[in-house]
Amino acid sequence: MLTILGFAMIATFLVLIMMKKMSPIAALVLIPALFCVFVGKGAHLGDYVIDGVTSLAPTAAMLMFAIVYFGVMIDVGLFDPIVKGILKFCKADPMRIVVGTALLAAIVSLDGDGSTTFMITVSALYPLYKRLKMSLVVLTGVAAMANGVMNTLPWGGPTARAATALKLDASDIFVPMIPALAVGLLFVIGLSYVLGLRERKRLGVLTLDEVLVEEKETVLVGAGSGADAEDERLAGGSGASTGADASRSAGTPASAGSAGSAGSADEDDDFQGLDPDRDTLRPKLYWFNALLTVSLLTAMIMEWLPIPVLFLLGAALALSVNFPRIPDQKARIAAHADNVLNVSGMVFAAAVFTGVLQGTGMVDAMAKWMVDVIPQGMGPHMALVTGVLSLPLTYFMSNDGFYFGVLPVLAEAGAAHGVSPLEMARASLVGQPLHMSSPLVPAVYVLVGMAKVEFGDHTRFVVKWAALTCLVILGAGILFGII
Image (cartoon, rainbow, N blue to C red; front, side):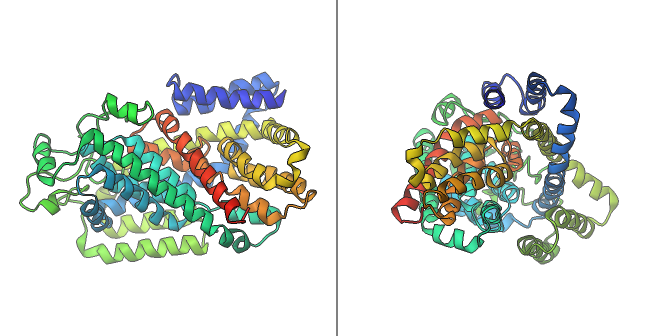
């Protein structure tokens, strides 16, 4: 019964948000509360929610202060050279822009944090997508898939969890997987090329002059209309939310589209995603901010302090040095308050969902059912089975639930048929490109929130491509003899 209710709760949630019958926050809170009553454990709902909130509170704190930190770095101009370089490569060609999205997301993903990757990628490219009226779900989908492949880095989380759960060395799991993961990343880049060609066919290739002429009609870039009906069709029936709020201050992550004024004499300076004349720029502090950011990312990778503490300290230091006056600090915090509230609210709402799933025993029941339905004849092929199961299980469950709850059971079943734990651990990483778009991953709300894309639209677009990416990695792993 718990198994049926668990799958029913997940299916109800996905259907309602994809059909836009409920907002993600409302669905994440009300649906699990209702099913908790159906299970007969309504009296324990408070305990489940508190447990869920307690487990996700560090993540929410990390996201809050990370948004403030990187928002300030964007405000003061740290990423302006990167943005300008990307835009020079992309020019006004939709194909180059989509490929650039995959490359930028993959490079930034080296820090191992999905939220950081999405903040930098969207901040850099959102203005360009809006200028050319490109589909914003292509931006979110490609960024999520590229980050999903790179999320398998030993410091990204899943590999460390698999190593811990099966008592293995993380390098023994990851290093042999590199060829398969490289194939997966190449597939994402190739898919980006195809999606970019579709966007180019729909929009054409503009010159900088043509873009700038169109820009003269509005003071703030990104205040135009969103994706049109044809864009919605090409993007899997989903369009982007329309219209960035032109009244927002330039340079904030959510309003990165409120970019530079048109009509400057220098086209290269004019064609960039962030306002080159905004009053928050701090050119004299550029190298301080660069060193602070590199130090922060290094400390995060080396695990010198918990990530929430690092971003809390980093945000406080960045605000104090770049904006010594208290009114200026308050203005910067207020400029990013919408993002902070939206993302942290989504994380705490997701805590209700995960708390009920785990507290009622639905997760355990679903995992046991999945293991029990595997035919006996598939025993010698448990690595393949694990790779396939990692797609739905890491999408519907947290990484902790899958790697610490399900993987040991699957590994034990595989060991009985001579399948090594290393093969099982490698196969368990296959589902990460799809996992990064799971409604249980807080970082995805940073991605869709900053890109102003409905979560349901993102889900409809990305699931099929992300699942295909996972299967490509699995096939490559089998072909290379890794899995």
